[in-house]
Length: 317
Image (tube, rainbow, N blue to C red; front, side):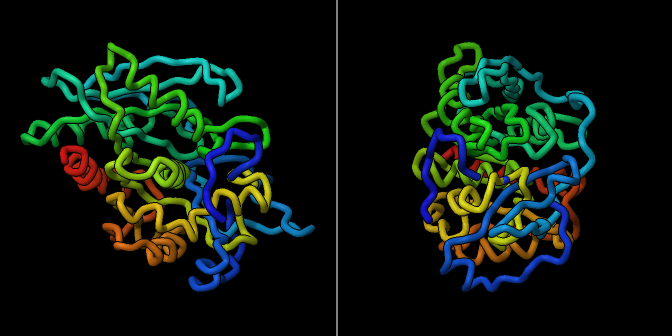
């Protein structure tokens, strides 16, 4: 079923116990299957969901230790931070952070970052990942500058939920327009890049499919938490079977035909098989990067330079 952008309260919801195997042909022809990214921990009792009156455990585990406090911002370009009251997030104050490379003036294009589960808008700039330092190195080498902007989507999984919140609509309707209208940021949002990891990897792919080209110039994601089995998905990512079907990216690969796409995932990542399965349906083939590593900050930090270069090169076109 095609992805639909909706503000209603019921679209797109982790610990495995032997994933049921579904062939690539079965997934692609049925249009069922899901990408849902998540990094970090939630309560274990939410790791099952009722499907057709039976309880099943999700196929792949996106849980990592939960952040207990905002990650400290280290060296590199200073962050510009703020918040807005988001209608799509129940009216709550929604924090954001932007990094512009130092030594650069004028209006810049921007890459919008969607974070992983139990992390926030500061995590991508933290000592664990430090994307702003990678950006500064890229610009100092003589490449065209751009900015990086992240927003706090909580554990919403970047789509409309039964509780009335919608992290994806918040990004599209509130955050991106704010980036373009805030004179202190001096950013252009006519053409944007998208980046995300784990839960945010799914979110970046989903929003990229909704916006399409030429608005989205490139997407780079790490370890997207993809669930390709329609019987196995976590309740924290989808509110039910129908929600899963509405927000599945399996069968939606044509939406990426004109968007440069880079997917990086460790060969030991629990989502490796599902990600390869999804990538096989994308034409032309995306840049697919893999190597030793799991669903960890260490792997994600290691692939950031290539991802920043990929996004910057396409933004500069």
